[in-house]
Amino acid sequence: MSRYRGPRVKIVRRLGRLPGLTRKRPAGRKSGYANQSTPTTKASQYRIRLEEKQRLRFHYGLTEQQLLRYVRIAKRAKGSTGQVLLQLLETRLDNIIFRLGAASTIPGARQLVTHERVLVNDRVISVPSYRCKPADAIAVRQSRCRSVGNSSNRIGEQDHSTLYPHAGLAVRPVDRKWIDLNINELLVVEYYSRRA
Image (cartoon, rainbow, N blue to C red; front, side, top):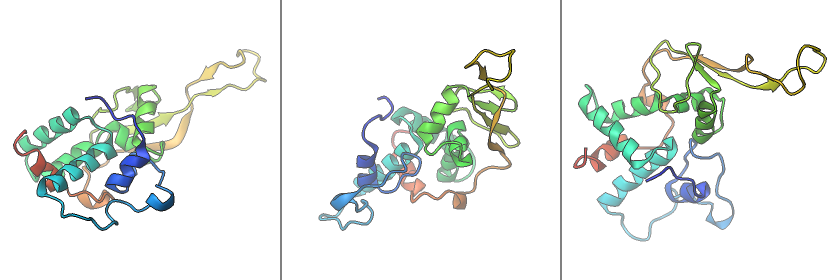
């Protein structure tokens, strides 16, 4: 199964606010989020867990296999599986670029990473799933045309040495209260309990 490339507002309408997926909000009479509407039938336990898993997957822009791999890694680690899972997802390079504010969504941050605009410890990293460690220096560089007045440069020549004002330092592991998502990660772990 490949990465989701369909309409994002439809997903937001079904699952609720997902700031990593899109900044757009549903408009018109269908503007009520899934969490705010009153259900006509009682949701099953499976459906509740499935929706939590989908919310987590769409927010971080993961495929099913990627999320399953992260759940398996979190189960083997010490500590609460749900909290370790969120820490693993929050230390992905594309998510850190999104948190720094260099991109408005995680897919936009992933594009910056794959276009080799991100430096980690003064090294270009082009893998969005790169796991950043504490004390990693992260910066985003931009390309812009050099000034026309400089006679030694051709017009349109790219200067890749300038940086965005978006630079940061990964200081310590992520705490659950810093993540502003309305997701119950324990339900995601329960969803994968038989597969992981």
